[in-house]
Amino acid sequence: MINFVGAGPGAADLITVRGAELLKNADVIIYAGSLVNPGLLKYAKKDCKIYNSAQMTLEEVVSVMLDAEERGLSTVRLHTGDPAIYGAIREQEDILEEHNIKYDVCPGVSSMFGAAAALRAEFTLPDVSQSVIVTRMAGRTPVPESESIESFAAHNATMVIFLSAGMTEELSKRLIKGGYAPETPAAIVYKATWEDERVLKTTVADLHKTAAENGITKTALILVGGFLGDKYDRSRLYDPHFSHGFREGKRD
Ligand code: SAH
Image (cartoon, rainbow, N blue to C red):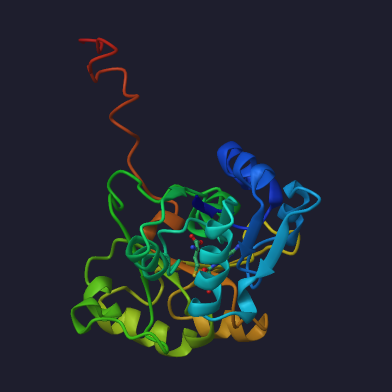
């Protein structure tokens, strides 16, 4: 059995209880060493075989899995944050399917939520934005043309941008070109929930200046939108006049 497990954003105690149990029971752990906290390996059994996938190809990773499977061992493939976000799990799953190998996925706390917590922010503020756009700048992995930063910026919604901390100059220009006002609040969160976490508040116009001044080029999220500002409406759900299935609203 293979379990793809989300390691959480950084702090070792942000893995799920289920994820930690799977780690404790694993005979083989393949972890994404570039971003997974090595502190999580403390859960591993003494005789657990541990591989760092940062130095491995897809073929090498899968060959470790197939070998473990042949020997009836249980494998954890530990991915940073949640495996569903830029996790490259699909290509592994498809090879396992071809070999008729059973696998499961255990979710994790994505760094986008680690960053929101670091900012003590709510992505979905009434009257500000009720949508979150999760995207990235094109790098070596292309982004479909219909998903350009400009086209998303036109919504003025909450935006969380992964894998782009080294491209803040172009990102800032494209966010403004697409429709965010230059003074729209923005933040750069470096290594959210790690001990050396840094939270930098800035604006869309000053994104590059802030990244450059602080020497940030990777392991950071860029967050953009009015949710980082001061204005919003209070929620309807907790409004005394609002009725719903669990509470009768006041009439006056
Ligand atoms: N599956 C992961 C994302 C993997 S892609 C998740 O759910 O978080 C790797 C990118 O995620 C990095 O380039 C960076 O943009 C972001 N990232 C991962 N961990 C981070 C952290 N602790 N703080 C800020 N950004 C992080």
